[in-house]
Image 1: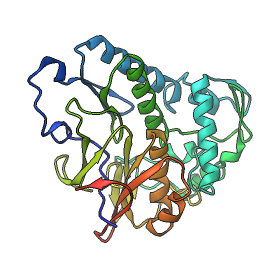
Image 2 (image 1 turned 90 degrees about the horizontal axis):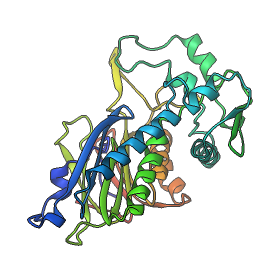
Image 3 (image 1 turned 60 degrees about the horizontal axis):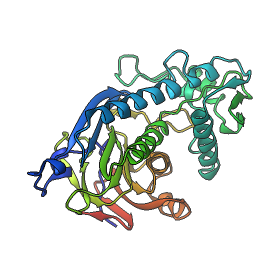
Image 4 (image 1 turned 90 degrees about the vertical axis):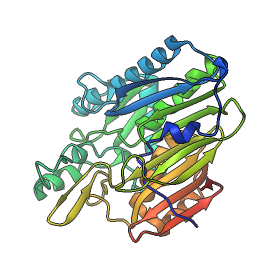
Length: 328
């Protein structure tokens, strides 16, 4: 067991690319960044100088955001939430993502629940609005139940007409995986897709060495690292309580909500960084780990498909490491 940082898995390209010489044009990284999904999204590829490929990939990211956003009027999720329980035709991608959300709702015993939309929209993490009223939380909590999501082909219906879906804990990982797959279809053999705290890697660096991803120190600056994770083609995702939060009367209120209470999860985990086969699985599991706490995490993840390794930072400052993960 070792220590982990909740690094909103923002990677430092200086860390990512260190130790490699890129004098040859074919080895020089090509990168583009765009503000999407309420975060900074960066795609870096090797072996090509085709900027149009990166534009296509980021445009694809924007298309997915338009499908999955809870706040963009006309998105699949927005239409489901405003349908009053009537059936809604959605994209195959949205239907697939909803099925995955239901699957992991079952896996987590309801700790992970994508019908928290009414709850999540109550909270303003600027701190300007403070803690929501108890009666509002109680009403919203009563609409949470992933079992009420009915998916038939590409048609979705909510059994509770007041329920709202929020894919914020699952969409970025899914999109990162889709962008990585897109790059592979274009012949890319080395790339990093970074969507805020969700990273998916393709192949290896030009020199064959592993990718080196910096893990941020919880509550530290962007360059304050707990350490570096080395990995091949896989995904690395981080969740934590220090990125979106406010403090009131000495209490920290963060964005990872417990579906059972409607309040920020009471947990001993400050941050959870997971290496998995896919970013979407890492997205889900990192949230579950914070919700269930460190003691239950190891047993739960032993049953999770696609889990490779994890580093946790705890409230008391300890670091715990599980599984096969290179952490320096």
